[in-house]
Length: 302
Image 1 (cartoon, helix red, strand yellow):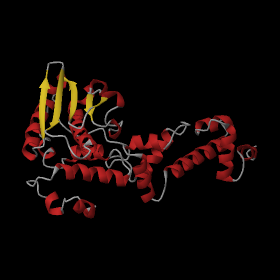
Image 2: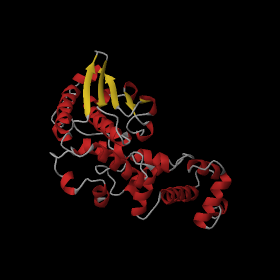
Image 3: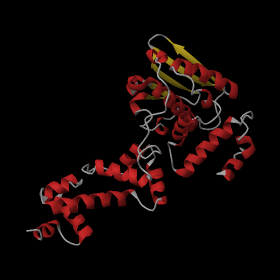
Image 4: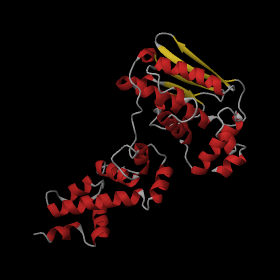
């Protein structure tokens, strides 16, 4: 990572000096290159989320003490104005909707998709906890340069409109501006540190158990629950010495062998409960797990 950042002319000394301005093009190209190398289209959004939750960076450090969304955005505008000069921010409020607009002064040479997703995630992860139960993504509209880098856990596709490289827009109900709720980052995803899971494998195992009857359960659905890209989830599980396929297969095996032993359900019912749409496919899987068919295993119990 240090070598990559050095190649992008962002040395360690520059990265740790908040009074030093980094060229915008270098920032955009670096984030895009890292996302490409990791195979993670949601990198920008993930970084923005983590910055918001952990008060990372000079801007977010100033936001934690603000209780209302209105005060939060006022502080945000003051802070970003102090640390950069490539964009203009404007907050509008017509009584029905509040609209935060970011406009670039010149069209960027590099792709701003990931940086814009980062900014959007940072803002939403600051606004959502302050709004509390009133939050509804259907009330939110965001105009972004590339919808594909905005994950579902941040905003659904129905809340997104494709815009241009010149800026970003976030609109939400005006009434949220005055809501006063003590700020505390919430809405943690499956497998995050404050959950009861010690490892990501345990979190995925729990999710598979809860959705074991879903015949369409796959790594994409599970990654969405973990707020990870499927490739990122696969890589992290590999680092723990396992895989999504292995975890799901093991949970199905445990459920099936227990159910066969209890004798309360038919083989077809067990197949459906373990996500198999056909009993024949379940029988083949059961034989792979145990060396015998479900029918033979059940006949031994009689």
